[in-house]
Structures are given as C-alpha cells and as structure tokens.
Amino acid sequence: MHPARTAPAGPGPGRLAPAHIALAALVAAVWGVNFVVIEIGLDHFPPLLFSALRFLVAALPAVFLVGRPKVAWKWIVGIGLVLGVAKFGLLFTGMHLGAPAGLSSLVLQIQAVFTALFAFAALGERPGRRKLAGMAIALAGICVAAVDEGAAGPVSGFALVIAAAACWGVSNVLTRKAAPPDVLNFKVWVSTVPVLPLLALSLLLEGPERDLAALRGLDWTGAGVIVYAAWITTVFGFGAWGWLLRRHPASSVAPFSLLVPVFGMSSAALFLGEGVSPLRWCAAALLVGGVALTSFAPGRDAGRGTGRKRVASAEPGAVSFPRPATEERPA
Image (cartoon, rainbow, N blue to C red):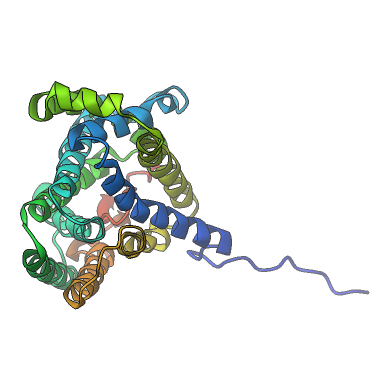
C-alpha cells in the first residue's frame, strides 16, 4: 500500500504567499510612483483643480459599481473633508510650491506619529516606550529633512507637506472610528465628498481663468496623470490593499507600506532627476525606522489581560488601535 499523500503545506499563519507578497509590493510601488505622477500633473493643472479632478475621476463611474455606503454618512463626509480637501489640497499645493516628489513621499510618512498623538488625545491610547522611541526617531528624521530642504530651497512647500501629514493623522483616527468593512467601497464614497469643495477653493484661490486655461489645454499626458492618480492609485491600490487585508493579518500586510517612500524617492531620482543627498538618506533611514516602531509597537493598553484586541487601520502605514474584545472585527 502506498502511504497516504498529504497536501503541500501552504504559508503558515500570518505569512503571505509569494503572489500576495508581489501584489503588496506592487501596491507600494504604485503609491510611491504616484508622487512622480503628481509632480508631472502639476505642470498641467493648478494644484487644487488637479486634486478635484483626481477625486472626480476616482468617484465616477466607480460609485455606481461598489454598492451603497457601508458606514454612516457622517464618517464619509468628515473623512472626505479632512483627507480629500485638507490633506490632498495641502500636499498638492506644497509640491506646487517646490517640495520635491521624493522628499514629499518620505515626509508624508510622519503621519504615523500624528496618528499616534491624535489617537492618544481622542481615543485614550497611551503609547508605550517603543512607540515613543519611534516617534522621537521619526521626528529626528523630519528635522534632518528640514535642514536638507532648507539648504536646497524654500521650506514653505515642506511645511505644507507636514501639515498634510497631520491631516492624514486626523483622518486615520476618524477611519478607525468609522471601521469601514470594505476599503474600496469606503474610498470611492469618500472620493465623492472633496470634489465640489476643492473646485470652489480652486475658483476662489487659483482663479477661473487659470482653471479654464488648464482644462482647454488638456492633453494625453494631463489625462493620463489624472487616470493614474484616480483609477490606479485609488481604485486599484486601495482595492488590492483591502483584498490583502481581508485575507491576512494587518500586521503581515502593513509593513509593505514602508516601501512607499523607497519607491517614491527612487522613481523621483529615475524619472525626474531628483538628487538624493547624504542628509536625505539619513532622514529616510530615521523616518522609516521611526515610523516602523511607531506603527507596529504595542501601546500600553494593548498588553496581556486587557481584554482588548488590536485592529490595524485599513490605511497604509496607519497606527493600529485597541478595540474592545466584545466588538466584532469588520469583515
């Protein structure tokens, strides 16, 4: 008799299959290259108009395909205003004022520190020693990046990118409170909110003549950057990220978000010719290391015997927050 055959062992608990690792890395690459795409798009559109068009194309026609919203409208509107209008409006404007694409992809990761601070203020999550150490290291990276940027040019754009990261931190806390069960559905509906406010701000601050000139001069490159920022970055990126989160522990998926600034800085050097000084490499090492500690270190209330689970945010690179064990985790 032949011995009974057993099925080949698959990846262990929490381990990603090679195809899923490739998908997670691809999403990180898509998000990193998006900073180069934004830089190119800003040559064709005023920043606020560009951001409005990005959300318009991300929302339509996808909003008719993803089904009805699965969270309360107060969360969709609130996050749409904070994330869509404030965060992306500040990011695009900061890059328009001179913040380099590669540096922006790096500095924006300080959102993990802002998320931890706002989670402490709003949710009562006290950061442990490792998380505090990570925050200090990441802030040191921001200081080094500020010194490097100050030596290279004006810091106004740099400051707006940091403000955008702070808004991202607020939206991460709101997203945790909303607990969306479907990442893609949530992102598409959130994308419907910023369109009109951003268009109004663009008309007010950038002027109708400038907006009309940009729309009349729309070419294939301009259309391509909008499609990439909307469909590839938002629809594909968050759709694939949410698919991975539904199949694997967030602690296995989230570390791939740390590749975003790696792809951002390397693609900016490759396609835009941005130089990377030794100070910037130092800032990158400090920021990525600090964000890793901040994002994945347990908080003081997440220890043994608390009766609370930890659930990672659907946002890439966001900090996980404690949730009562009696609550069900979103599917």
